[in-house]
Image (cartoon, helix red, strand yellow):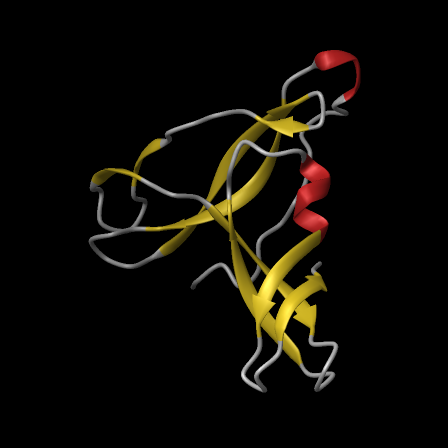
Length: 113
């Protein structure tokens, strides 16, 4: 039933200053269900947002913190791990690399996707 991996689909091309969105996820603080949510961007940068949603599982109205679940390949042990990236008002290209901590002890930057 759960949403396995975040999709990052634009609704329209984000050229010429038009507002577009990418699909992120949120987790309901009451029932813990993961659901998709639109997070808007313009000119290559996410817009500051404080989304309030009504959970589709438990019908509770909550302010949520959207995130994107991505995988990264650890440069040290070569294993694939998952990490959550919070939705923040940053340039879109900042979501290509993240500082990660692997179970093998590696801490540092890794390409995510």
